Image (cartoon, rainbow, N blue to C red; front, side, top):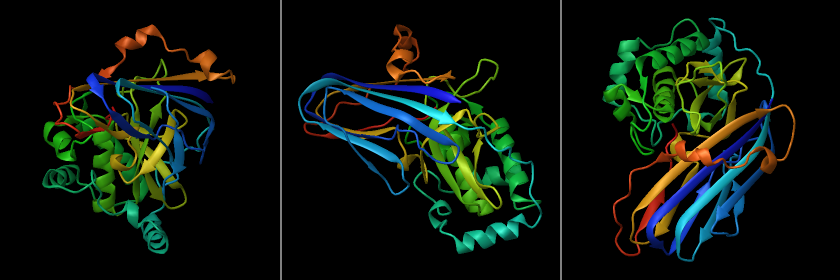
Length: 326
């Protein structure tokens, strides 16, 4: 299946800033059952864009705008081909726990087993663990299916209820959050309670007309991948109670959100800023050019996500640019 993705990000400043430095992780990966056919990144004001691969083999683009400007617009466009996913069974054999431990001991999984910035156990998480009676039983896969459903049923999906830098306790205490929160909670539970290697996945979800997903079609998405014997890395989407499949488009993987934000950067100046984000994923059987298939429609003005205005900055101060995954 072919998908066209357009990801629009706009930073508007109340008064001029003197410099913006930014890196993005919006280039879809080519691995497993997914292949990125084309990608282009457009930036205004115009500048030279550089790229590299980080240690997780994610594509990272970065640039510096040294002159005065009142807005920064980033448009990432990509064409991605996904293959039908191998159906994930409901369970594995009872010996799978022992085989998992053996493979983990012999492999290099330590980074996806240790706590990280946004995936750290807390008292509130321990209370949730006890409430859900989460422990090693039966086999790893059946436990994961159950946990995926439990998180979906336990938490309400509430856009903008947390921020990009919110710890998991915000969602745990309120009982509501967005995909980023649910992915962090599931990641922490798998690593600390079940000792299953787990990584955070940033990307997009194609929304079908006949499927009622909780996540927003106009935002980026996040889910997790757990390592299992016989199956390798398997994706679970607790926001929508799904096993990740051909509708999920992967852009980056990491320990948690801190490794894979779509945008991350700083600006220099004394001003307030407003963040606008809009995402559109469309499906096509053909391979027409992105420019032809994906014009920026005027109605996108109703799809934007506006962040709260940032407080005024002291002279020559720097403020991070980030967008939460909804």
